[in-house]
Amino acid sequence: MKILILSQYFPPETGAPQNRLYNLAEKLTALGAEVEILTAFPNYPNYEKFPEHRGKIYLKEKGESGLEIHRSYIYVSKNKSIFSRLINYFSFTISSFFIGVFKLGKFDLIICESPPLFLGISAVFLKWIKGSQLVFNVSDLWPESAIKLGLVKNKMIIALTTRLEEWIYSNSTKISGQTQGIVRDIAKRFPAKNIFWLRNGVDPKEIESKLDSSNWRKNNGFEDEDLLFYFGGLLGYAQGLDCIIHAAAKLKEYQNIKFVIVGEGPEKEMLINLAKDMGTENVYFFNGVTKNEVLNIIRSIDVAIVPLRKLDLFLGAIPSKIFEILYLKKPILLGVEGEAKELFIDNAKAGLAFEPDNSNELVEKIKFIAGNRDKIISMGKNGHDYVCEKFDRSEIANSFFVFLKKE
Image (cartoon, rainbow, N blue to C red):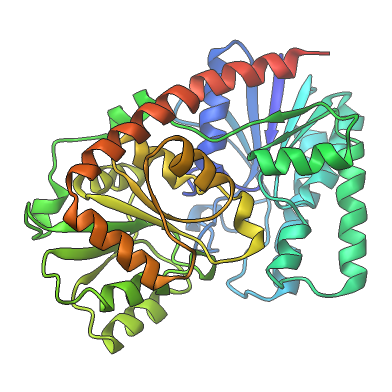
């Protein structure tokens, strides 16, 4: 089976979709599929192309594991306006179509990653021209997410993008969704479609191969008796990280409770200034690091905080960082309601939940852990066992491959 994975985002970019798709491509290859990638020139999250890629329209390269990767033109700008973002999306939508037509052969199957929703236009036309089947993989419901975040308010644009969404789904041979909530939503609107829950997960061999003998805690001046609460990832508005700063301010008298924030993002400067204004000397900011370094940091901390804003939009969200954190036997303080809480707190018993944006409730959970350190070990083991049993990426890929081969 020849498979083309079409995605705007792919390594060497860092991020959840990039890592997930790369791992999926490797797993499908191991199962006997011939997999190629059609993606954009890397630029995320800094929205800046590598110097060697500037001015190029097309590039064919080999990935580390031998994957054949085709990269096509994308307009990149640090301007965050809706207009600039739309040019970014449509530039790759158009270039991927022409590269797909003139540079690539035929495929039995095209797997298209969304968002951006607009890439589905290229996928549908390539499906028709190449005589392929199309699997539309939905990681986030658009335009619903953009509407709930207030990014799109124009009624005409909402109507047009809703029509586009319906057109893409109707022209997809099969559909997959990253969460059960996404799957249920699409199944309700398109009951005749064959839909698969392509959940995220862990790859134990990959994680173990990236761990080393370094001691991040000791190397950065933290003591064994310190209780380290960690957040790592994008420092953006949706994460609601000011809740952590407010919680830290209310815990100043606890000298051994410390907060570690690792990453980059548009809210970083605001968070640093907020921490200074509130006199929170128990908050430590670190620059963004590589995937390997992230895993070694997680291994050195005690508890991970995984928050999102209190928005209905996030009721079905499952932050991808959860899986590696739990595999490494670290419990989570989860500030996400809905599906994530049901899976990892109610079912797995892998941590404690607090109401999103509620710093007082977060403080209560932190105090409980500080007084019951034995719970860190038991909840960490629960999480590790749960993700290994329910979210092993090899087993997920095997099931997905069976789904792809079904008529």
